[in-house]
Image (cartoon, rainbow, N blue to C red; front, side):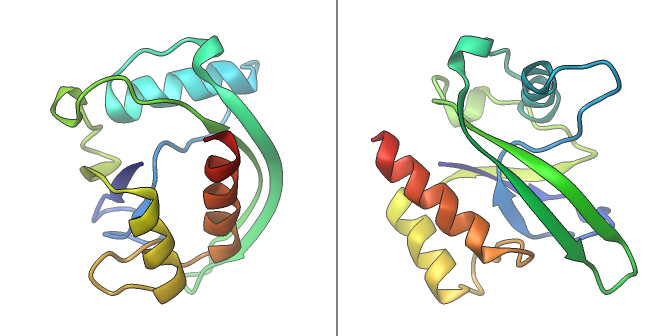
Amino acid sequence: MLFQKRSATKETFPNYWDVSVAGHVLAGETIEDAALREVKEEIGIAILKTDLVKIDVRKNINRHPNGIIDCEFQNVFLCKLDVALHALKKQDEEVDALCLRSLEEFKYFTANRNETFKLVPADYSYYTFVIDSITNVL
């Protein structure tokens, strides 16, 4: 699995690891087009709509200590990464680092709130959902 470390300048959860890629839909843009654009922006590769496997739409509300309230519908996709990690080009404004971790490691980090690999703590049920979805696809 590909993870990205959020930039130190992010307003919410700077320097935390998160599943890759995430973003917002622009006015007039389809969900799929937004996903393709965000992949290109954040990790520098072009994918096709047919590469996306939509697994769910989730409603999520997070209230952050700094006063920011995120209310969003999360359209969640899986996509096979067909290039090597070194071939990715991270978006420096958004992403400080990229790494690959196994599904077993992801399960461990989620179950144990591992301090050496700090996942964004907003909603651990999301991570469990992603793990279950990947397991079902495999």
